[in-house]
Amino acid sequence: MLTSNAIISASFFLHLIATVAWIGGLVTLALVVQPVLNRSVSAAQDRARLLEAVLKRFQPIANLSLAVLILTGMVQTFTNPFYKGFLNLDNAWSQAILFKHGAVLGMIVLAAVLTFSLQPALKRNALLIANGLADEQLIARLQQQQVHLTRLNLILSVLVLLFTAIASAQ
View: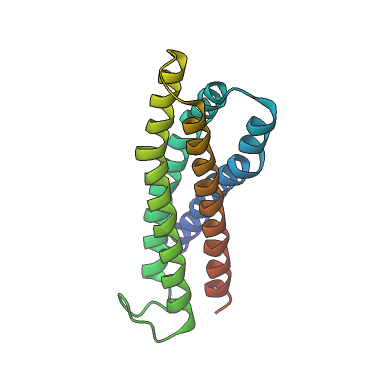
């Protein structure tokens, strides 16, 4: 039978792995993949196609990481002695966790905008360009928006880590 310490330890381990996968993927996208594509691939359609292939591999990892983070985060929250109840902010740990969850929510919203709005628009416009029906400048603007939103997501992930460090120091 698993002890509560074993469950909490497993929760911390899985939470860390999911954090590394999600934030590591964002770092790779924002600081490696997107800059390399922008410098090395001149045609907007080709950049869109390559980035789509990268994101097709990353999104399932990010989605699984998010699910693991939610489940393990709940275990950690409910077993933490500083947790006094939903929106009870009478200690520094609770306040840091609230800000952390706000940043995570921002990351989820940005990921949803990227996944369900911007990436489909990029894909549609790449197909239109391939058929000579669209403007390459539009797809370049969409790609620039994608770069900015990915970087903003990365900034939010750094805030998540900062608030985690503050909570852990309590």
